[in-house]
Figure 1 (cartoon, rainbow, N blue to C red):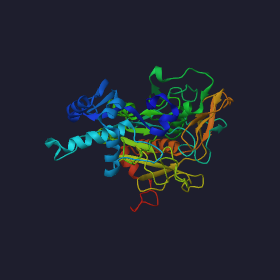
Figure 2 (figure 1 turned 60 degrees about the vertical axis):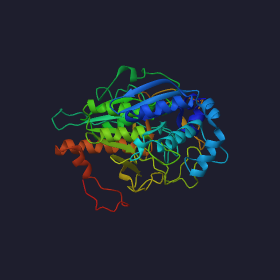
Figure 3 (figure 1 turned 90 degrees about the horizontal axis):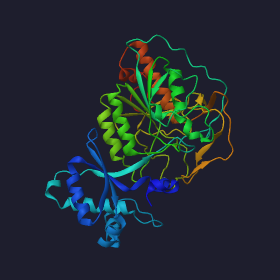
Figure 4 (figure 1 turned 90 degrees about the vertical axis):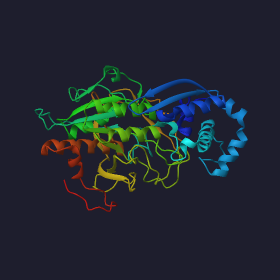
Length: 423
């Protein structure tokens, strides 16, 4: 079964188990080795913007069995490669990648460098504690939120990209953002999980801080708040052509080996010189017991936030101190309010959804109303990132300075060794 076919499976494996991502410079080598192993490439997608190719595989399990599954597993354990739990077996994809790396070691052209290939991982992070939610795991009804009036557009106004779920039309947001028609839910639709409203909430938070900013919204996360790293990376680099100054990414992923997803890393490398990338730092700071699925502790890096070139934003509580759920890790660059924020939301017939401790998505049968139009109160670093994106854009507009200069004026967290700036 492919990881994408089962919600529980995707929570456990956290990657498409029939796909690999390959650098274009190394695809001939990989394709030759796949053919020799008896693995077929059933579909491929190429990205010139990322210099990567996505390969969908068929016949992988049979090829691994024919080659010698037990021998490969024994070699992996001896080499200490990958992640192995006694209750599990290595996945077919783990064994394939190990085999490809060993084969590359025998090739003279890879004596100086290693070939670049890896998994197409899932990204997520719009669900409940410990991922998103914090002190208030689920969104709750809030009173009306009044967004600041938009002023006159001027040359110093900034453009903010938001990469998130689909968007729900809301009267308070009309005229404040641009998005493709197919990325909009119809008005007054009912029965949707609360995760669907994530982008609508995020846009409202951004607009409250930066009412004059032009907000460009693109949908990549599905109704459960997940997407493949390939799809996210493709949408990320597309923002370069949209001319955004800031890209807000309120989602995250973790990996079994704590290494960044290849395709996300490549997208950040291509985009960060031109765009200020801001991402949620995750809500796992108060994990006293490690999660089994996904593998996570209070020290786990989340991606893309922990990548160089990305501003990772943690959450401040209402008293101005770090929220308990917000990680205090070296790669967390900034903090912003992220507890009890109020913003735009879905209206009637919302089914509250959150992740349980095993990574499964639970969607309530009972429908909840959030008013008409809808407003909610919610907490998490997802919304702290949105708040910070708006803060930076507003300061850059007010002072008529580049967004990176505005970002540098905001204080670093106290656990950072550098002397903080003041806005």
